[in-house]
Length: 151
Image (cartoon, rainbow, N blue to C red; front, side):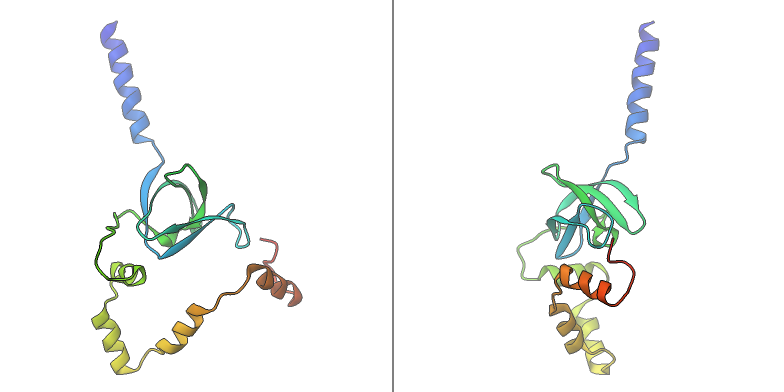
């Protein structure tokens, strides 16, 4: 009887470990907005920084439901997460540079693009610096008769 109980206990522990859905993930972008739902205009609950670790609870389309170390839960873009541990270090590279390097982009590659003049970095930098208020964007969508303002 003791062997049977021991066998069942081991089987139960193995099954719960095997079927555990939560996986540890790491933030790969400078700032990731965590929202209350999967809609574009869902309320922003909090933000995560480069290298933060989270638990992956659920995946839906291109979004992931996560839980941070404080127990807060929300939805974030799956593209901003990685299974690979991100090392936060004391050297001088910015979070943007580290994120790009993690995706195979380097200063040498950027310089080769600049020499060949195939990329307009000034325009990219200008677009990245723009911040559009979500309420203004929502109103713009409604005024233009476009779909998606109710998400």
